[in-house]
Amino acid sequence: MTSRLLFLSSLVALVAWPARAQTGTCPVVSSISVQPGFDYESFANESRWNVVLYSKIIPIEGLDMQVVKSDVSLMFSRDADNNKTVTLAGRVRLASSFAFCLKLQGSVEDSSEVPAKLRQSFYNPLTNQFLDFNFWILHTDYTNLAVVYACEKIMAADGTCDPGSSYMWTLSRGTSHTAAERERIQEIFQSMCLDMTSLRQIEHSDVCPMT
Ligand SMILES: *[C@@H]1O[C@H](CO)[C@@H](O)[C@H](O)[C@H]1NC(C)=O
Ligand SMILES: *[C@@H]1O[C@H](CO)[C@@H](O)[C@H](O)[C@H]1NC(C)=O
Image (tube, rainbow, N blue to C red; front, side):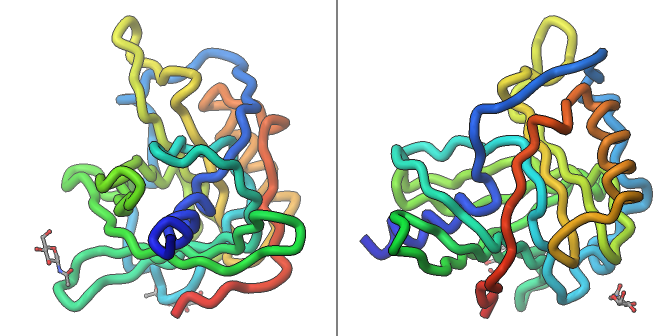
């Protein structure tokens, strides 16, 4: 039971509802531009990134319940062997009167040619397998905003992302975005043929511990 509950924490970053709207011309996935000269150390910076907006969840095999989350944060770091790591923390609400903070540790890989194309991996005790997903940093200013994208299925016909398999998140060092940041986010969403109105917001009111 403990591992099952603990695993729910992985939902925090991945949570979503099926809402999604597609607009404009969708880019070929291999041509999507990511943060140039991405620097993992500055991005990690021993400080949290709070998930503010998200499009939908990456489905988790073996999990059949919907949970409500808030206060979802990510912290990037390195372990004793200098491997890149990610810690996910968030509050999971299983019933209106029952909520708790959960934390999950995962690993981070990057593609050596493109440092901004990260991939996260978390152990899934429900299937005894790893849940892996892309985590591409499309844009970040390192200090307050990051826009993250994942495509989990490319269409063979034209190389665009399968509409049901693209995901976006925005991260902030704070808990909301400024008007200028929203404009930047909107530009990026449009270039990805995603509609901002399909986004959901994660509430941040009570910080979950990372350690
Ligand atoms: C971490 O962030 C602070 C505040 O923005 C900055 O002064 C510092 O240089 C950053 N450290 C790294 C390693 O980027
Ligand atoms: C770092 O990664 C290597 C290769 O995946 C692994 O064998 C090693 O156990 C990792 N180190 C830690 C501290 O987890």
